[in-house]
Image (cartoon, rainbow over all chains, first blue to last red; front, side, top):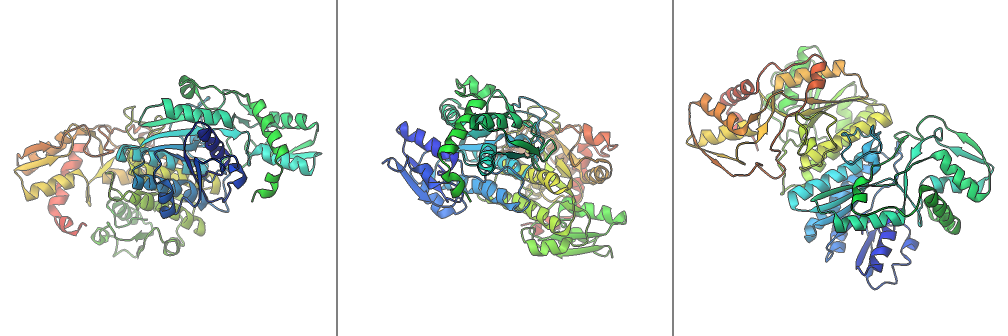
Length: 314
Length: 314
């Protein structure tokens, strides 16, 4: 498991361990949290290796003996970083290539990959299916994840790999540590009387609860049998950013003055509407257990109980 | 012009110079041929800089004062190189990122890019339009060109660039120095009595004459005005590999015994059918001047007059 100390990966590790699997976690702890591994660490079936996916030698060594790689390490910040445009190339594109080469070095041929709905750029079809029209990328994050998908697929063709590529919407839930709920709650902790919102607040977004995400990934790995399995993971619904703010403020019992940066997009490359077609993953027998509203409230409750995150984060 | 001493780039340089433009050519001469610049070199409007696109400092310096970048440098070998899987990542993905960053360093915002019909993987729609269903990559070459397209598009969104992305079929004509006509003619020079063909010979492929390709690129840069302009460049027809062999053998007056490696594909990641929808470039007022047969014969004639290429090439 690359990115083992990250939000989604650490939840996936706990689930895998509970199912009796043996897991090696690999993470450079640049953004992951060691505390996210506190449930896994006591397990005799879990080993943690601190290392960077860009470093071929320790990465290859850490994989030895494994038969499946979950590659979740990534720069997960979709916002276009004009101050660090090389980060997506390095962490997401080159990093994924290093993982593929380390697998090849170990004779491991099965990989699950955390891609993103951002690969659709600004989609024209809603809900957006996996075979939507060839998109034009609008973020370096989406471009780098597309590159990762492409290299993985090419390794399937050229080296006999099998892959499960998951295009996530934004994920919510326990260990959530970046995104709009985090940003809003942190801001409201500091000043509950006002809240500044990027864009006009009318951006329509879809979210998925992390336990539903983990269930979907494991189900797909078990039941999807193509050489390259590409699957959207998301909810059938969406909410406006303003709705989300409403849920949070209602739960907190506050009513801040809302100010807006304005415009359809919260940042350069922001996508004003995200709704993925999940027919394919549902046809395998999966459905989400929580609504978006429930997921947001669960996330807020988690953050309220874990304010250490606001200190721990870079 | 990156990749200046290459097949297509050198022809494009000659055309640009004939139109009165000033051109700086940049090439590391790893696969380009200095002789391809023999027409350009005497021009006072042409400067050649030997350098690698992966080296930021000389690349940035070479671009100084330019207002448009044609980025044609690439590893142009689509065949899956199991012995050098990192080459496409380095030359095509990272190389393109270095070019974009060098442009940004110089305040240059317009770029034309040589992509490929290989980005469609094994297309399901024929002729294949630019907005074909989101493809699954089948070669590291296609994956790396897709990555290049994505980063260029993201720079358009994030940094105000404008781009013209050309998805080429295989290009034929003067200075052609790799591909099936090259391989077949070289083999027949050595032994005109037999010819070994990769695959079953029934692969259907589309080709375009280099002068038609150059005309299309310049027309598109002038007339296509979107932020990101993605254009297929190809012929409305295709030929089977066996047809192509027939044209070559007829022109040479020989009738070799044909042997086949068999199978629908000539190599791992080979695409058994390539035919691009060129409605978009034609709507701008372009049409090709040569048929595929004429292009193949012109290429053969060029190779017959330039057998030095068989010695010069790596």
